[in-house]
Every structure is written in C-alpha cells, then in structure tokens.
Length: 399
Image (tube, rainbow, N blue to C red):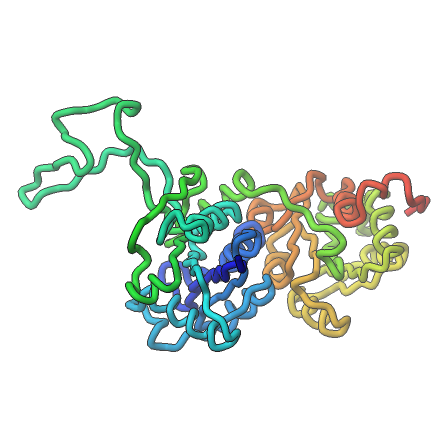
C-alpha cells in the first residue's frame, strides 16, 4: 500500500493586530512559525509542510526552518478570511506544484508554541489509519462553565447548578486546544470545514495548552518555555560559524580600574581552550563587541580570532560579516548576555545566552549555558559542538 501524502498547512498572516509581527515573535529564540514548522517536520506521518503567508519575512523564516511556502492572495489574508480558505488554497497550490494531491491535510496553528511532533503525528495517524475522518487536539477540562441570561441570572452550561458532583464523578470533558486539526483531504474539499464525518480526539497535556493572542500570552509563553521545551543544544552539524560577544560573555561583566584609569577584565582559560578547539575544527569565529577597548583587541589577538569592536549596530555588522563569509545567518551561533545582543539574536538561527545573561536575553535564547559568562560558558558551548572529548583530546596551554 503506497504511503499516503500528508500535507501540513500552517497559515501565518503578517497582519496580526493583537501582537504585531506575532508569527515571527521568538519563544526560546525560535519564531512561532519556526516552532510550528519544526513540530510538523518532526512528525513521521507528515510528508510535506507548507506555510501559507502574505508576508515575505514569514516566508523567509519558514523556508529557513525547512518548510515550503505558498503566497496567500490578498482576498484570503484579511481579518475575515477563514483558516479553511487558506488551507484549501494551499492544497490547490501544492497539487499544481507537485502534480499530486494530498490524502490527508493538517491545519496547524502558529499560535500554539508548545505543540509537539508526537501530537502532530498522532493527529495525522487518526486519519491515515482509517479510525476517523477528522481529528483534533484537545485537553482534559474539569471546569464548570456558566452563562449569564439577559435578566442577570447565571445558569450552568455543562452542569446543573443545583447539583455539584465531585470531579471524579463527572464524565470526562475536553477543551479544543486549537493547535492542530487533521482531515481526510477529499472530505475536506467536499465539506469545506474542518469537522465532518467521524471525529477523533487526540488528548494532550493541559499544562502545554497556550494560544498566543495578545502580548500577555506571548510573555507567558516565553516564561514557560524553559519549563516545557525539551532541552536543546546544537551540534557541529547545525552550525557553520560561531560569533561571540565579549563583555559579560567572555568576562564576568566587571571592569577593574587602576589609579591611572586603565581598565582590566578577567577571562577564563577554559574559554580559550574551547575557542582553540573550535578554531582547529575549522569553525569560522568572530568576536563582536560594542566596546572600543584595547582589551578586546588584545584578547582576540591572543586567541587568533577576528574581532569587530566599537560597533554601534552589532546586527548590521554581523549581517555584513555573514555576507562576506558566505554564511547563512540561520546557521550561525551567536552567544551574548545583554539587551544589546537581542538584535543579533533575532538574526541568527542559534541565539545562545550565557547563564548569567539578563532575563530578557535568556527568554529570547534558543539555548542557555549552565555556566555564567566569564566562568567557562564559551568552553561549554564548544563542548556542545565538539562533544565531551574536548576534555582530553586537545591541550592548548596558556590560553
């Protein structure tokens, strides 16, 4: 039996009013559209992933994370356009481009940042197995719902207010999460709606249910991400270059000043060992600092690493360096510690915060070191990329 074509469609308009630029807003260093794409690509049942968008910035981000894109026409991009219309348009575009139709289509929402690949896969499997015509993710709910009547009297929706059963005595109820829906493609084309025929639930963890509709939701997502995301650190195959901030990243962010006004900082020999290992592994390196300080230049010379310092716009300097090196910014690891690093975080694919970084920087990072800046954080990053053999394989004294 041939493998069914399972097409995941991720609608991602550019004109969000509740959170401007919402679909590109990073959570743990990854834009919402990128998190949705990763969940779909990680699901074994999914064969194709398409992002439907009217925004070129979203399209670029989607492609960087491995999705195909469909240009959504203006008439399907307004506030009144339904998600179903975007999915139908994407199905038509997919069929025209690939010469084959989808057997199963998924509607996946960017606004659910904690959707997992396993949930996507299970939802698709409900259809491919023939168990259902439509399926969706839902979380167990034990809430008592109420409605206020026109006369002001409140009445129970899912319960009789005169009878208050215990939680364990109530029949299970489920809340639609809005994260992912799966439909048999032929039935979806006929009904033009996400629910028809036999419908199955995919029960998810209620702790992971969050829809980003306003700035407060986004703040909650960023606060919860360190608790809910699987720990993720890059390997060498994920990174083509490493760019390092200096103050607070390679130092502890303190400056010692002598009586003549000369500045001194402390660095960690382990960081020098890690940088030497990366250099020997052939990884392009750059130190990037806003400070115009001879200390920065002297440390870079000793490490034999190129340096750009005294830079006002680090993101512009980083973009120019990537262009000159022929490196895709999405394959750059950038390590920083403070708010002036955030523009670079938004540019690269692997924004990394040192353990002592400002809270807002840690929240925007894709990975955070256990080690504080100036205490071996760069060595920790080198071990992510090169493996634990860094401990014994290399010996570079006095770095």
